[in-house]
Length: 332
Ligand code: NAD
Ligand code: TDX
Image (cartoon, rainbow, N blue to C red; front, side):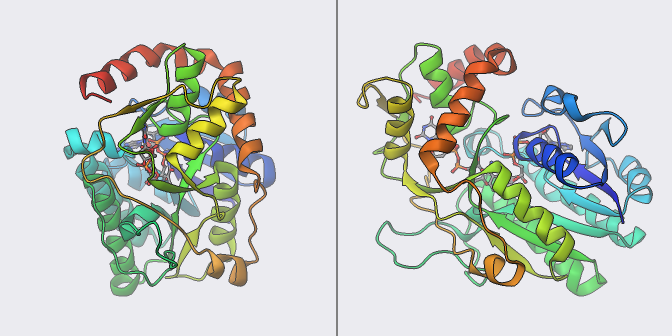
């Protein structure tokens, strides 16, 4: 069992996972990615070769998926439309990729009898009050808020039903907010870092009191690899690194690390339906699979991420103007 098909491997978390797998295992990897606006082959170019090949294609293409499925042992499924703001403006691609695309993959995986791991998000659980002492666990009821999170919740339920009804050999994981290298600059942390690098003030939605639970993408990768290799079929594992921070705190950490006054940001139009707080209890993963995060110092992780965006301007610079124009047109 050493051939792995990674969908969405040219995206943010997928590309970090491809690097992690090539550097830490002996798997042979096939990346399947449609190279949407969010995919960038340059993110994995340095590892393509004998042990990693790239296939440009859509997870909704059942003929292509069937062909790749027969030549793999395990599928790790990252491909998705991933940005909440985009899902509010144009939900259709979210339904097509996140729901129908996942359906196409699990139908093929069950026909071929292949091991499947489904990547999902803590957003399927909705949000928490700021003062709620509880955090999300594997038994928290689903209550998604946005078109994005509802399509991710739908895909989770499809995978669970395929396990129960058809015996699909699948595991699932729901992770909190990731940060690190190769993240598209539409997302919160890289948007603010590249704003400062471009002479633009960081932009905070609403009050800035919304809380996200941050984890470094490489810790997400190590957790997924553990679940793929040792997880129990049919089980869901929550992945998180106890990294709760308000958006205001995050922007202040970035400004401070980049030598700017910590009040040099703008408050902008809030997101419609904006989830207030996410927080993950990852006890099950830590206890049953003995997983621990390596990046436990958020400030250090942010400094390393700032360094990456500073040293890799060519990776993001061409997109900056159009991303900011889109945000400006929405008052954000
Ligand atoms: P991303 O948008 O950076 O990357 C998505 C990748 O999927 C891109 O390379 C894109 O080209 C590809 N893709 C999109 N539609 C496709 C299709 N129809 N066929 C083939 N490839 C397609 O997303 P990300 O932030 O890396 O998220 C990856 C996964 O992790 C998603 O399933 C997301 O729901 C989940 N997740 C993300 C976070 C986060 O903080 N970013 C947290 C928890 C879970
Ligand atoms: O400019 C901004 N200003 C701002 O205040 C942007 C882009 C965002 N925000 C806020 C909105 C959120 O409260 O920052 C927080 C994080 O925003 P995003 O980066 O858009 O992430 P989020 O909506 O929390 O979703 C992310 O984590 C869960 C990923 O994009 C999802 O794919 C994942 O499932």
